[in-house]
Length: 383
Image (cartoon, rainbow, N blue to C red; front, side, top):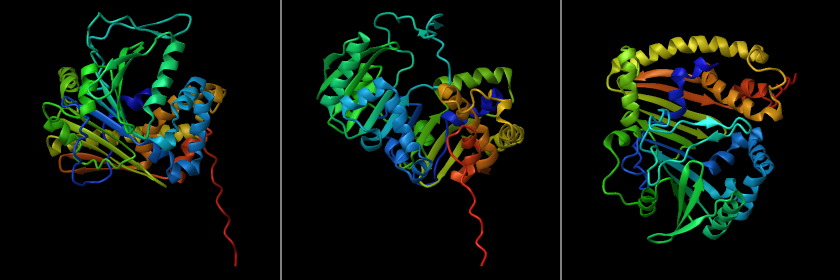
């Protein structure tokens, strides 16, 4: 199963779009050094016809209710995700798929299996900074109270800091301090760097985003239910250059950027675009992935005919092993989508995957995990 994700890890964190239209202007909160960004619209997804038809809107609420601390936080904050949370934007000046070479080594507690993260040196900036913007309808007072309650329970009281237009919060976490700021009752900005948070709150930077990152958003409309954009710069480019020394024929060597956009309504429509420097690179990616898809198609069909060949019978669909099932489903979604739901084309310098899915096309995979009951075909009525 792991081999399915080698090349397709790109597809998880790099590019689907919903149509070639005029490029959207980058969000004013996106920092100028951004190389990777994603945006998800929870309200749009949870209220879509497909999600409601599958009953996943209620499953989502039930799952949250089963996690006591999460539901307690939402109740105190006065939040209903499907009603109040319009969008979540996440940005990084580095690639999430490249390991951080400066990160301190991690270990697992032998008793609790929790990750042990050594404290970074005092004053040291996080090696992988990030910024997140939540948009919707919020009550800053209620959310602050919920965060304070959570901090007290965890033995890590929340600190209040002075901001330009509002107070800021500092939350201690295993990954270091996290800073939270409010822009009225419509935006919440979160970051692991205080200065990045302050700049995001005012939405003003000393320079615009790079032209390469702007190009990586070329086909996005910002109306998608979910999108991601990643330009081949910084640590990602360096990582690829290192691989090229060992694998000089690497098909990604002329990659410029990737875009991902999915729109969920009564169906799912999307488009994955690998933008390259020349048509030869686009054709090389198509040839390589065509070969991989033939292999994945056979393995997917084998899994659907006998799911226990991959996942033990006592785990498959068992709610006690929901995490294992969700990880398996996530990993299987990649080859399943490639083999059954997509069509690959080359448009000039771009290698493009068109994705179309509906309940019927998703049922075979979802049914294996007990996430949907197969709809029975209605018998024809004889006249």
